[in-house]
Image: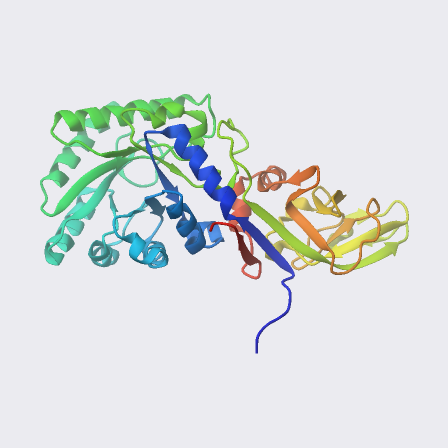
Amino acid sequence: MKNELMSRVWVEIDLDTLVKNYRRIAARVKPAQVLCVLKANAYGLGVGPYAKALYGAGCRAFGVAEPHEAIELMAELGTKANGVHVQILSSVLPDEIEPMVRVGVVLPVVDLEAAQLISAAAVKARKSAKVHFKLDTGMGRLGILADSEEAVAEAVKTMLAVKALPALECEGVFSHFPMAYDPNDPFTRHQIGLFKKVVSAAKSAGIAFSKIHIAASDAINNFPECAKSPFTMVRTGINLHGSFDPNGRKALKVEPVLTLKTRVAQVRELPAGKTLGYGRTWCLREKTRIATISAGYADGLPLALTNRGKVLIGGRLCPVVGRISMDYATVDVSSVRGVKPGDEVICFGRSGKYSITPDDWAALKGTHAYDIICSLGNRVRRVFKGGR
């Protein structure tokens, strides 16, 4: 039987704004290529519509975290995936290498042993495997160690050993920053210097790369030199959504893509002295009209909104009062006339002259927008608008 019920909670994803953001980023870093990071199902929002919209805007490079994501992205693109750069940005496990080589995913080389396995799989498949050297210039997580002057020379030796292996196309080299959200951070500049030394030393040793990248969204905003020679590519994820790290510059003029909505469940006029929610954390000082809305932390509303956050109802900001629960939240609607069950609530998004963004929620939670976006629950319906 067809489900004709309206969703209680949904996120509207404006693909036209997504495309606009992509084009602004591409113009900013030109002639560097933009690799769009769509890992974790495009941060839980839907990799298919994202990939198709970005492909239509001219994107030909995508990044993911692991093989299942790569396969899903390529399946969504279908025949369009031919000639598209799909890269695993983290690591690849031994049993994952052979199927990834067969379908032509660009693989990371984190050490010589991984390269040997990729080479063997490529020889067996009778094809060439594209790889990018992943350097650890200071992230301390994955990659060929290149976090000091001494390590640079050893890293180049490893790269030469990999280059000598059969059936490998060593087309790229990349690294990652732990502190690029701080535009004044000296460690990031130290990493840039080390990375450039590896690239230069490798070139002197006969290894030239067509794809050289270290910048993700934070560095594009805070360290624009990472989009200039010798760099030929940048990676962007959170900026596509119109969000930023709260500590850095907002050099890119991107716009929010997401609007999270729910509906009013009940409206009551409650007396002074009435306490609200678990823990009785809010006590009404006077008679107040309270609306219970049909979204809670299971839908992505952070507990940090408790007694601090706001939502938009009828074009007005309404404070959250009482603790956020799993399925509901309570808000003060005294400033809005005629609120009734079923009315639309904007949890984050724009209404009239007011707007609330994932960045605003992140600031209240002491986190970043990635955390907010990835926390949208699986009962939150994804509704895509535009993109045609």
